[in-house]
Length: 171
Image (cartoon, rainbow, N blue to C red):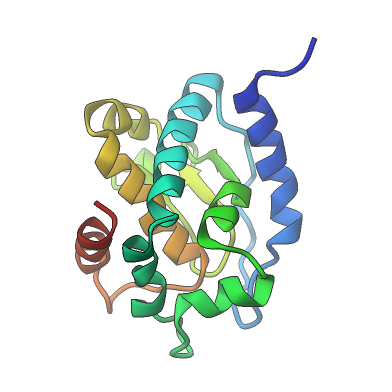
């Protein structure tokens, strides 16, 4: 019996982390313990990721990769070019992991979070409700966090500015 498509995608995403090594100069940190998403989270995340991928296949949405820059002032599109990946391909390979044990989730401050320049995104339990209530916003949240994995820091730009730009470009 073959695994369900969501499980296959999750496994492929986990394998994809080996292909997406952190960028040179990315902040070295002890990575949090990587825990796979439970099935409900995985299915919810996959719906949001697939919607985000569809958006990233449009030229208007891809503009965010040229508009936002990494700490060295390079457009985020350069990171994708170095890896020979499109934004959609990159997002397919980024692992999304259970973040419920991590402070941003425990404090109720995040639904998704990522470390700048590290190709993985953590999912908080509250993301399930967000995706069900507002799937378009959940898709844009996935894109927002993907930008952080490519090297986009915050303050500046603020989280609100990043979200507003993604919402504008990736409708």
